[in-house]
Length: 243
Image (cartoon, rainbow, N blue to C red; front, side, top):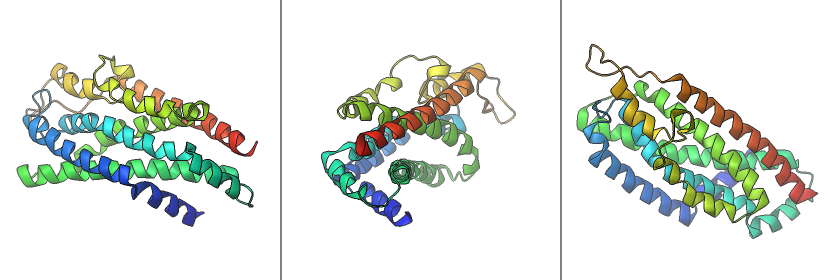
């Protein structure tokens, strides 16, 4: 099964469309860092957890589009023909489907790691900042709930109609512009850009990285809902392909 996972991951990563998206993501990362984040988010330092969270939130639409492209491969006509052959062998269908989902999620995390390392290198070169442990919490709360929610929605809706996935790619930009409350702030951009202004300054002149309970509950909602949708989507995906 590990060989199948590595093959699936290699097929996803070394795809022309994904490589093009990776180049676009790299260029947009630099533009975001050099034009917006370098000024600091909500009057915080450019290398504060708030600014790094805002940086990731700005990049999430492109990261989500990349994830959705990974998922489209699971529902393509070529994939359907391939599955008919694979499922006629002793391969466990559930394990095979989970491996494909894991490969898509891993591909998303690899591209996200590229964005994260790019941002860290920017701060290290420009500001001689190396306390990257400060970024663990904003990275985790920004990427993981969003990954699971979109993955679950894509598996569920893609099983109903393949073309819905392309509609989701367009819709990926909407959360960045809609004025959502903290609970429904999928990317977290609004919170990172406004919440520091409501907090007192610490001894170092920066507001502490503390999150409102509504935002934390929202992260739990996206996490749990995403897992539930993924389980339903995997079950439906299996029924479609093996009856």
